[in-house]
Image (cartoon, rainbow, N blue to C red; front, side, top):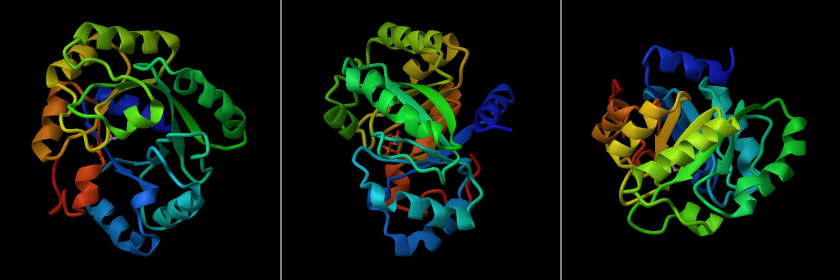
Length: 241
Ligand code: 1GP
């Protein structure tokens, strides 16, 4: 069974998914055992690994060490074609559909394709949509793109639908890591109701209520980065989500 089949199955059963996002640049390799323990105690169903500016050297080592103690599927969430490791299970093959920077729409993907062909990674084609969230985020800065207006639901939906028509398997509504404001719930609802593919939502979600609200609005998978990074006990004692 592929990662994507699992996500589709969960969606069809209305079983919600949770990814913890780990930024390799912020992880001290010596503390991995403890981190893996905390992940195992959490309700996470997936691990996403990536960041805007990952120094690649530790990526392989990090994934190998996590895999020793953790059975969750590991999905790369790359900011650049250099951030590919064959030790992961899959990769979000992102196209930044909200932006008009050709590098993040297609150029990096062209660079990555031959590298990915030499790996066994499952490719998860993802329409990546950055939503304005109160102040500039790293995605915006690094990609040099303008996020979509958080009030323009129709433009966000049209962008998501264009992604679906282009063949994306997933749509990711992103407020940006550490965002002041998460993706608006009415936007999640509007998009979720009008696309058929699974919806990922992340950025600026800092409490369990925020996760629940995103699920209730129609998110199939929620991504938590900063909140877990700041407090590895964020989900403990073992939280039912
Ligand atoms: C960022 O959506 C993820 O790409 C997670 O964001 O760090 O704000 O949880 P946070």
